[in-house]
Length: 116
Length: 115
Image: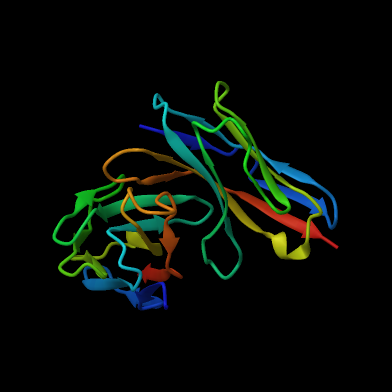
């Protein structure tokens, strides 16, 4: 099992460029999340999904879009990157709330994004 | 909305000694989970310990234990017999029982274990 993987690991963008971050999990988890971590801070939720075809906004959704077309993948898009979006992005997944170990989120290794 | 506060930005401890990291939270919920995550320099988020709010008994995982005071909304982490590998950022996090099971994180405490 690879667990939760994120692609790419690093990326540098110029202001106004677009990109998509890919999160993939092979644990058949229902729930998936995108967080961002700014220097010296905890993680903040951007968007999340409770199942294939569903998405919802988190605490800091502005400037981002997401899609969950397949259960195992959760994509995070930046349509027009801004320097304020320079951050480390983490994806996480979790089993359905009625499953075993239903409270634990499993995190990917993170993507460091710099917008110049 | 929930808030999680970690009042100690940085702490240090000598190897083999004990250290306690503080966390307080604010919520109107009665049923929720609390967590401590470790983030070493590799950046990977690692779950250290969890506590379910309805359980009065404090959680323990080997050298890690918590002091959960529900009425005071306090959730501290005690690390016994500190090891050099414990050097990391530690985050306290809150999860309520709702449709999204989202995590709310504190700002983190940077722990340095000195030889």
